[in-house]
Amino acid sequence: MNELDRALEDHELIKIRVNTMDREDKVAIINEICAQCGAELAQVIGKMAVLYRPAKKQNPKLSNLVRLQQQ
Image 1 (tube, rainbow, N blue to C red):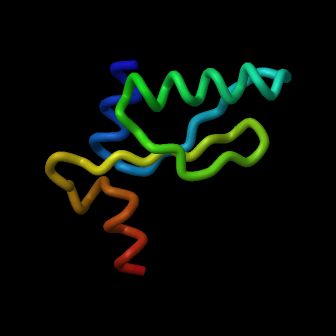
Image 2: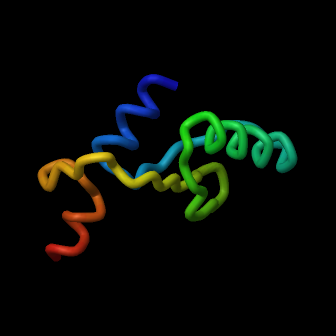
């Protein structure tokens, strides 16, 4: 959870892989991760989930959102 918090604070938008075959288990795991990290679920494709949480202070060199806006 510490690594997820750090990644969300640095990048704001991250992908995580949830390795479970059961769809209900996957949804429960993703929902629990979002609840514990204070993140929002942006998208799920297969075993990949995209999470979003705005940073307290954006770092333009690390933030995926800032880098996407500059392209």
